[in-house]
Structures are given as C-alpha cells and as structure tokens.
Length: 242
Image (cartoon, rainbow, N blue to C red; front, side, top):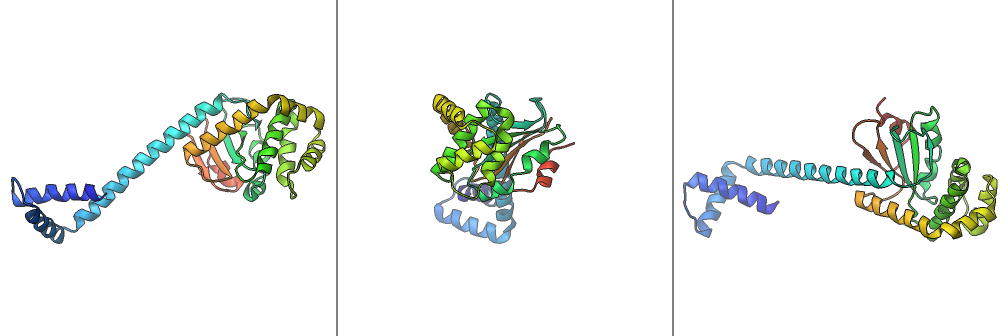
C-alpha cells in the first residue's frame, strides 16, 4: 500500500513540476506540496487499493469454492434429501463436540423435508480426539446402513456426555445399528475414512474456514457461497434461490 501511494504521488509530482529528474530532496518537497494541495489523492488511492484487494480476495475465494465443489462431487458422503446431484445443496462442516453444531442439529431435516434440496454432511473433527472417534464411527455406520445415518447423526449431536467408546456404542444401538458390524466396518475401512477426513480438512483450510459450523450453499444455477458460523435455518433457506 505504501509503495502504491508513493508511486502515485511520484507520478503526480513529476507532472506537477514538469521535471525530467528530481533529486531526493526535491522529490520530497514536491510530494509534500502535492499532498497538501490535493489530500484527496490519498483517500482515492486507499479506496482504489481496497477495491482491488477485495476483488482479488473474491476471485481467490470463488476459485477455492470451485475447487471444493470438484473434490466433493467425487466423494461418497452422507447426505439426506434430494437424490438429484444437480439439486440445490447445502454442505455443513461440523464437529460433534461443537456447541453451535448441536444447536443446528435440526437444519438438515428441516431444509430437506420437501425433497427439493440436498444436505451433505462434512465431518471436520477439529476440537478433540473424541470428535475424531465420533466422526469415524458415523462414517463407518453410514457405509453399513445409510438410511439410519441421520438418526445416528442427530443422536451424536444431542449427546451431552463424552464420546467414549461405550457411549458411542450405546448411541449406535439407539440408532438401530449393530455395534459389532459397525466396528468391524470401521476397522476394515479405516484408511479410506481417514482419507475422507483429511480431504475435508484440506478443503476447509483452503477455503479459509476457521471453525464449525460452516456451510457451503450451492443453488441449482449460479455460484456457490460460503456461510461461516452458525445461522438459523431460515437464513440458509433464503440463501437458496427459489
């Protein structure tokens, strides 16, 4: 920014003095005189710089979103609602130990109850090792029986205790799963599930997501948008045109 202002002021100073070459002292005097006469130059330069910076940031953010959509489209992730891959879609980055994620527990069911939109769950266990244990078991359970996933997901979020193995097993049973089958599936698919979690982590970091929850909203047509932090279900619904 400082160099941008200096370059701009130098150009004005050269024009103002009709000088071919200026000594350092003469340049400083010319700059001072110019800024005293036209202080709005600084304001205009700052605004121009901010506009350029915002445009560059928007371009970078949209590129990261496009890259995220390309990666997510190739992944087998838990979802509810519409089965059409081109349907309006909401992706949620969440951690089972996140208080605001627990507050948003009903968003998926509410936003997909009419079958028009799709809601995709992005496990991003960043708060503790127990978060990761819960995320891995939920992904293993999804691979065993996807139709019970939403109930398990809601039970894991509604849990107010810890996520010890015994508590997780109890939640699995309450959600209609055979604990032994899910545990065996986790052992079998552990490397693949780890890769899914690492990919989601990379996507979140590349997009500049700073915490959970965070949502990506993709309308049926148009550009995707990132919604950071908790928002109520009405705000998410309004983010999807039509």
